[in-house]
Image 1: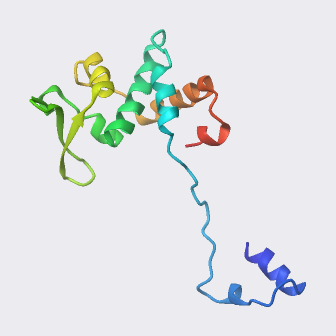
Image 2: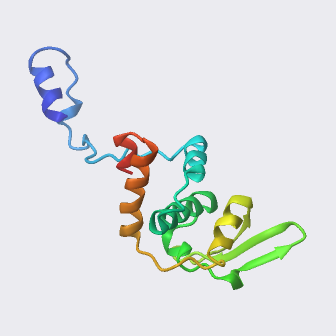
Image 3: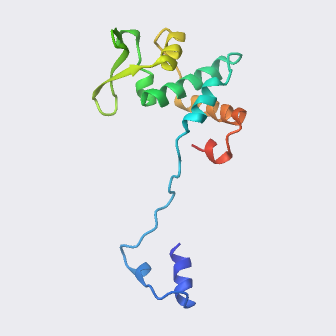
Length: 150
């Protein structure tokens, strides 16, 4: 970037010399990831992967993380004793690993269906395997290459 700006300066395209100052730097490896839209999440939710246990589990983990706003480290720790059922619906009470803060999250229908499928305790999994499976699922859904690099 600095090289292009310098060449443009030398060729008289502009006269700005800010690029020479020490504070001028270009961020490397800017991450332009964007979250899935609600439409894309719905498409993923509707995708029938019941014939492949591992792809279906990875899909479930991703959806739970998206809908509950939890990190993988927290999803791994969900247990039935963390669930409570009040007059206002079901709630998950969990202490975040990273922040050590306790959060209480309402469990809506889609999440409850997923959690119930696994008896409110997800099977053991690794983030790397889930990511590998999600790339396969993204291809099945026809998501663009840029989206798959998330």
